[in-house]
Length: 129
Image 1 (cartoon, helix red, strand yellow):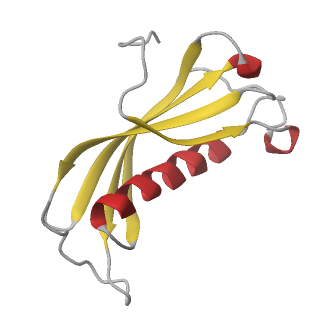
Image 2 (cartoon, rainbow, N blue to C red):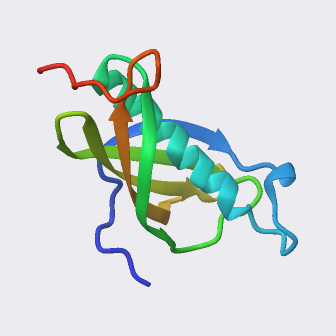
């Protein structure tokens, strides 16, 4: 699969380093760990937009494009796609700097839908911007 665009879309929402403890049996970074970073980054962005608590409602079009290696600097970017009455849809991409150097390489992409919730976990209206 080739990249449709050469640069990350949206804002940098999370950055960390892939460590040996996060590998699968093949020695690559476990996809579930990458997906959890994407969910965390989406939550950070959505809670800021919602001005409060949010919950992940759906993930779609998740593509693992390239493997992530130990030592890669993992950067997760989020971009607002749309909002509803209670929901926020974000494009989320993960890019890496191989061993912290060189060009960025896109490794995953997905769409996340998060819902603003109140203290009891029930959907609440998004604040007006």
